Image (cartoon, rainbow, N blue to C red; front, top):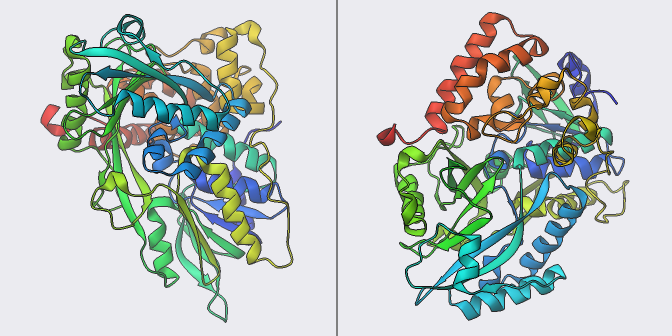
Length: 529
């Protein structure tokens, strides 16, 4: 099998953009990727364009959880919870090594909400929706074996339950891999600048600007899908539709695993306002989140954590793990994402509904809202709206497996668990990742679960246009290592510069740009720098 994006693939863009497409998907996050896959596998000629990098927006800055939405039960959203639980279970079966079970532990303190009985009742319903049961309540001695560093003041016991986690950016890339194998085309750094209209005023394509070349193209399509998430109101405005979104920011902290060691996730209610906060082991580090605040900043700029959000999350950590003596300087990175939430007029951002919506405006289908977990359902709902605009096309909208079962790569070269991880992240290309060089590439990068070979593969085959693409999304080194992994840049250069085709001047410029970006959007707030 050839590489995903072969060398010189962008040279074909004038030819590709000059064709007429059945479906033009604008937006390269998980919703756009899922829509491209479902369209291509049903025989539609489908093109996806993304103005930045694949998964650049919300889909690389989520909480990394594939979950049923336990808190939605409290709000009475049974249908959303059922849908999410079923999709979680599907992904666990279809993508081992990429989507993995994650146990959660919730300490039960005297006179703290939510009460033990209401929580356990919710978990009973949760188990019923998932089709399995587990023991949830543990006495204090057993619970402290699961979460030994938590506060023991007034501890009466604890509750445990199971959800799942993933690498969100790798999930997007894996879905795109399946879409390309089905005949779809995906192009990053190609932004939709304006919509094209036919004589009747119906949306008939878009003007696409290819950032690397500086060229613009009029791309015609029978149906345009606006899958730009939190940015969707921009294109909808061009189509004459009213604004409906309320962008909400969720920010996170990343700590070294040795500084906040966890055997499983710890979930708690924040002592200030009772909002749920979690900390869990992820990719060799410990992830802490999340906030839920209105994002009033320009959506063109990357989101970043504020001092108020940083202090809020640190307060939760100090409350739950008092004996660890955690300080702001234990945090090695931060990140923030903007959620595409539909505005229902709630005063409290956390109470806004999380369901997705699909609208059609003058021949353009817009899909937004929803959750990472339910991307397949969202894509199928989007395709149903597309079908209504293509009267000469029909196809069954059954929920097929997202991922084709890939062969397990040769595990003789590395532990079986590492091979399974590569299989989950790279699918049918996993074996090629292991064919790139000597045994030194099969070593993990210290402080992470990433192999050096993964960097080499991504540079060769995964449409990397900038250094930030490589270390923030294809791999997650920029989140897992202090100062964005600056100490490893010489080795990364040795492995990747030639494959990327960059001169020394280009490499130096990319490093400068990446470090400036990291310090502005992934570092601690300046008050703690």
